[in-house]
Amino acid sequence: MVQSAGRSLVLVSGGEKVGDEELLAKVRSSMDAGATGIIFGRNLWQRPKADALRLTRELHAIFREYAQPPS
Image 1 (cartoon, rainbow, N blue to C red):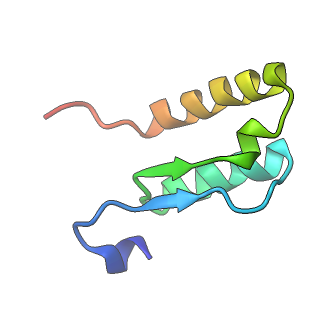
Image 2 (image 1 turned 30 degrees about the vertical axis):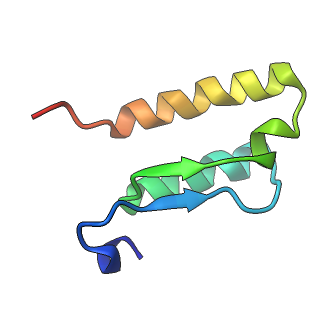
C-alpha cells in the first residue's frame, strides 16, 4: 500500500479493539512498511486512563525509533 501511494503520506487506522501486544505489533509492522503514522480511537480511549497513558508512552517510543531527523 505504501509503495502504491507514491509520494502521498500513509496513515494506518487502528481498527477493532485489540490487546497491547497485537496493537504494538501492528504499529511496528506499519512503520516498517513505511507508514507515516497511525490513527487510534477505541484502542486507546476504551481503556482505563492509566493503561491508555502507559500505552501512549510505548507508542511514542516506537515513533521516536522511526523519526527522521530534519534535513
